Length: 368
Image 1 (cartoon, helix red, strand yellow):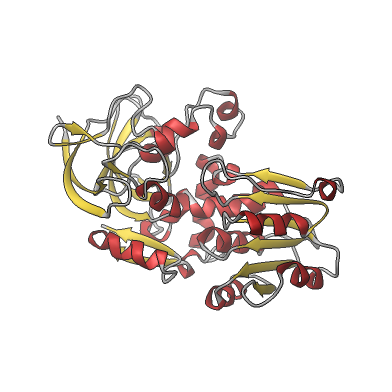
Image 2: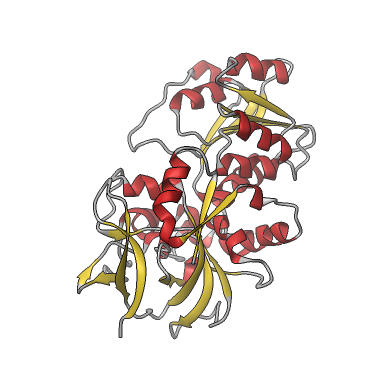
């Protein structure tokens, strides 16, 4: 039997989120039904809702869910009814990258998470009046009061930690943290530059503050976000609306350049400036995602000093170990994620979207 619930449906590209009664399919052998408690709102959700990616609409998005397991399929072993879970991306579990501990680079990542809108077997998890809707977004589609969730999207977490405080861990936070911990891996005395002080960038700042890096530079065009970055661990800030970025970074680093740069803006001009600001053997991590097909021009000779430019998806995190570690840091106050979060009732999703677009909210979290 189908499971009735209420979801925020995007009818077509550019349309608002509209609350609608929908039906969930029964969970398959490797799926669970999760009662949502909270879910983060991410720029990826807005990009798909705008029609910028070929996700089937009408559809239900949402990929930073957190909730309580209500039922599980017969083959699910990692969680049980009553468990608290954070929801993240899904993966096949069988390809070389999945088996090697890099599920964010799963061979079937795009159709399973971002553009497919269906299970791997082509069936739908969500329908309305007998018509299939786009769903299975990141294996969850968490903009709903209940969700049918792929087992590999489920991460069991400490029930003592409020779920609304950790919902963003499933995407944005683990992306920013993973850029620093899993790619840059700063050593004593390192300089880390974070381009963009949104949710991902500020997560990277917090992560860098937990490493031996001694110089942490946050760059943005909004003064209030730079002040917050200082409070979260940045040792220096650059307002790119007021100063030349290259000159400012050269001054901060004594002309040596940055050992690591995290680019979160998706602006190719900023990316180019970040590459130019790298020290010899420095690494820039590309996190911000411009439209498909976007290209950037680089000075090839400038790369010959051992510079590296590395693309990153979801922090290159193995979620079953990475997310519980982040939850512990939140619980102990060492990852002050609450400084980024603004909460909204689920019914106010469009207000959350507006506030995020206007820069009033860094990380909106919808509560149920």
